[in-house]
Image (cartoon, rainbow, N blue to C red; front, side):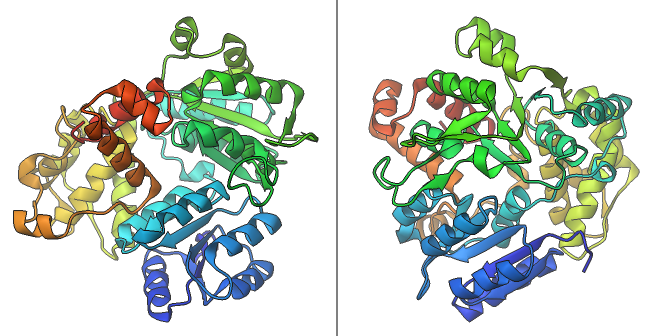
Length: 452
């Protein structure tokens, strides 16, 4: 086991399920410790450091919510992923309010679990781990290294999937704060009525369900770096409060009266044209200039073609290692990769390589196999011939169930739209979100290939 492997703590009182989860994670190359309950988990956390805690929700004598509260009190920056049954959605939502990073709905596929681990337990990216084959990317990394040495606020702008968060990790890893927490929050993924409490924290009793006081993301990043992902999706009312926090370098929890001094470095990302958002009145001009101290524009993959093949080989090798396979690209596949436009950028490239690895009959991925995996330009999905659709009878008997908060949210939003016959005005009233947020979500679902 390498020293750089991600260290995971699995908490599950069902021995069979605990062994299955641990085996899945170990096969992916992670260092895993399994324990049978909350008290044993807290003891393990005192003995050694972990990158992520994966815990069941229903346990005795300490359930997942109680364990989450205990971890938040001791290690506020520790990400906690909860596993829960389909009937415990309300408890899972309460866990999200309490600081859980996400939850997995049982039963879940191994890839869903590994995807959450990649999302929440990835260690900071070092310079050697950033794939930079193109001169533009190498030049961008040089600029990122220079700004990393300072505490200047950086605004990373670029299309969705270009790797903005990777560059944010790179800046943190090369900064004097590298040994301190790196805390990220996606401003578009959290409902408006929860975003303020998630960012700034809250005191016990400040709103319904606030049973204990909770530190916000700003406090959790104390001494380190806070990444405000998709900052352009933040509601205007909250932008004013964020501006004050950035100006005063102190935060007040929701329902609190005490100002908490902050020592953090702030990074922000957006996939929108920020000056245009300011001109349209959707983003505060004063906040834009507060964030845009050092702008970094991340070019799309089509504008840095020198990265395509190195990235493709990197993703192929990484996913092959997780599957205990070896794989390579032949000359025809490499030519096809370079000819593709990559509208989905690096994220599309990684998905394509994973699909190609699954379909490849041997160690070599050829052009014919790769052609089945390249997304259709209109839908962003593989061609219909490449997908093996289940029989209609089987689909009717076993409908797919959401296994994470994002899928659950999407099903809820689309179901609400169907109930109101597509009326966005009625939908936003029922959902309790802004029309702007709904537009963003629907656009995102279309890009992912869902029928809106």
